[in-house]
Image (tube, rainbow, N blue to C red):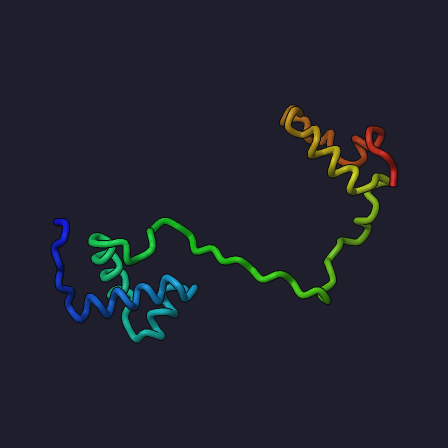
Length: 125
């Protein structure tokens, strides 16, 4: 009903706040419940109950995704041994060739894109 004020119990307010903290903390449910001193069963029950009445809890079925900070500038990039040369083929030119032609290529012939199979079509390193 529009304009109707619904009185919330103290427990409901407490659980709404707890679920809001959970939504922003980035923890799994088990360690979060341990820190909050509540059982997992109680957590799930309140999340389900409050999820029916409002959007106070995050939608279920979604995975929490976080943006990772960039690696420090001093961190060396890992490169496999011999990656500078793929059988005499320039790796950048090879990748460009693959990305340019793979969309129109038959799926059962992807081995045509192995460096030694398409070396004649790519400038050498």
